Length: 242
Image 1 (tube, rainbow, N blue to C red):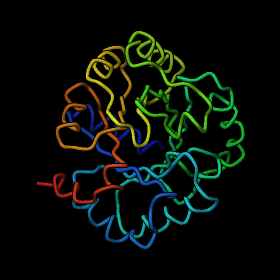
Image 2 (cartoon, one colour):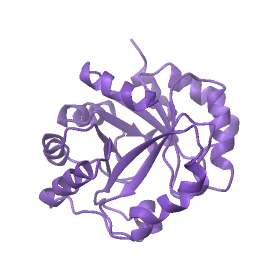
Image 3 (cartoon, rainbow, N blue to C red):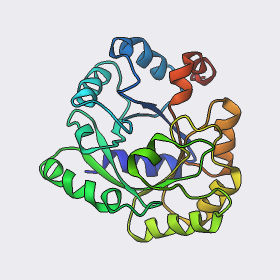
């Protein structure tokens, strides 16, 4: 039963904007889990994403187990590799890097993951992942050996998102990359939003309330923030529930 995805659809239909806090096991101190998740619980966050481009073996499973002890929020895997699949999570974004042309990240990794997911209780959510040009080279670009789509080629970005929808992806994720110097622009987000009917996720480079509101106003249904919290947990103070 697709409870996570169906809840996302229901929330969006009710006009709710969603916020995911992304935790990278490779950059997070597991001893800080309790205090960090307390801040997440007190914020407007609706989901917790766990994953990164390069993560040590078993680190994801250990971290997810710790997170689940302190929150009732859905914990969703955002894996950079098959080794990051954990049965302790609630759902998995089954990412296909549709902005690139490396077959490993279009289908190869998915075939590798299939034996792990065959009898899994994880809710698997097919997700079209589109990497957008950043000022600096991101970890995603390095690991996947693919080039991001240029920001000024909005038609190609829009067509890529539509292709993902036609391939029956259930989500489209526009990504500027971890540590991106600037977020994805209003023109890109709004253009993609007009093109597709499935939920739109936007992440990368968002470090302020104004940036968050701008992404929402441009058409993002869910925004993902990670690096901003890694660098400054006081950002949570601006995101407290009313």
